Image 1 (spheres, each protein chain N blue to C red):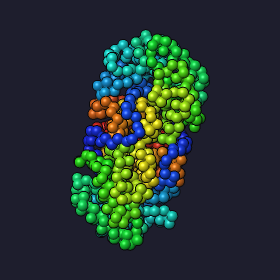
Image 2: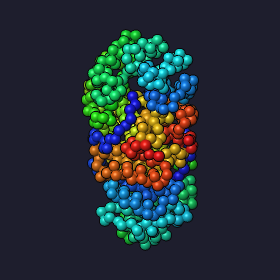
Image 3: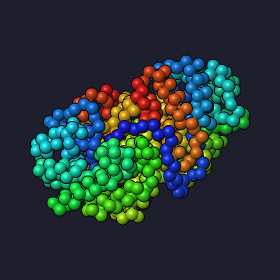
Image 4: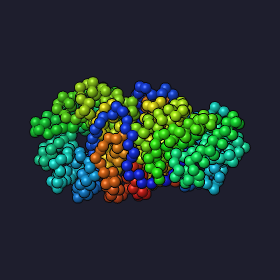
Length: 318
Length: 318
């Protein structure tokens, strides 16, 4: 009962009751995707990637990160990228900032929106921020306060919200409390991240409800899934059913690897678009243009795209 | 916010309300999986595969197909496999039969349970069965009647139930009506197949409800998803929410290809197990043993496993 798939340009729409009417895709490919790629991409190619994502209809694109260049060599060109990029006034271009120094660089570069990151676990706080959970939160809160004082909206990422590679299970109250504190500090939105992709659908509802109960508005919530265990899209469905309206994804699954253990890539934007459009939720994305972008980018990275929709629609790509 | 995944042997349980209490996995790797693989696997290796699947805790394993050998050379050893396989009395071993001649061969070989296939679309009926939809149905009904007369339970596969590569959209009433006619002929269960993997979550509910409304009991339904567009697991979640209790999958995603357009592989059993166990639905599967089986089988096939759980838990496998 197998047959070769031929091109199916769009999914057929079958609506589902009790889902949000409008959802947003928050594209993280140029930042969270590229920072996990081994092949260093030059600034001109990144600019072409961003331009193609804009052309494909993505409206929120996380551009880069103002981390110290030695931490993430891939994003060491943050200033050059920002200076050369011609922003469209109707689109949003958040950038990640790890601390006040990074915020200073981002403001200098003309950032109009920023994002901060905290950790749900001590082990990840130590590994990723060389800090404690409270220390990383204090650093993030300082950035939130300084950025909001400048009039910039701030997104707060809560990482390891669904599990941790060292500590294992994470109680839903932990990310919920961190989200509440970031919201209290002034964050306009909170992205709950399953950084290692271990979470399942029941957990999504629990973490969302705990976060709302702790004081972050449901409409301010985003979900950030990695597809390491193949759960990202079923988790998106659970998130939609819990009333969440913003989902993070990465064009072509940038940041993942099609055959390695390190396949901790973000949910592929194309796979997310296929689900959302199939549910009758308009994404505004030109899927053919996005698939072409991911095929082109995979060529620059020298490996096949990980997105299943890209592989299905683009043919044999190696 | 990426981090290398370390081994997480089991998902953390977070139950979700309103799901079935008990679900079954119907393993199709040795039949639907292998028949889509290019590398011909010898009978001894197939027997080892089946034995390892039994050891890993799978309780229903579709063993092979009694199609004419020239149609599917990979399964030309159906008689040899059945003769050499030592069946465990507590497990189920259905085999696929395309027609009365195939049923005769299956009975001769000692089959205790069989499956038939019909097509939802004329294009696929012509391509796969060289027949019309009605002609293929009549052929299947003849097998169902003859097999039930022998006391064998019969499963009816309804293929292309969610879309067709040539005809595009398929109305939910089409597979629903075919399912009702197979049920009326005596099928004990019906597996609705998204053969090309295009369906999305809203459609799953529609197809299930249409099928139940047309006369097939909800408890007799199974869902058979391919992960071509990455939708298989979100479709399983939608199926669980619609009260379906049986899901088809293939160990390691056998039948898929990690980088080709022809990646029409079945949902990987490991990815399904991760979801079900995370939801607190016991599968009885020893995930470590199953992952080891899929890694071993991928070695025999000379390519990486497509299951994301296998890649996450088994390390870099090429």
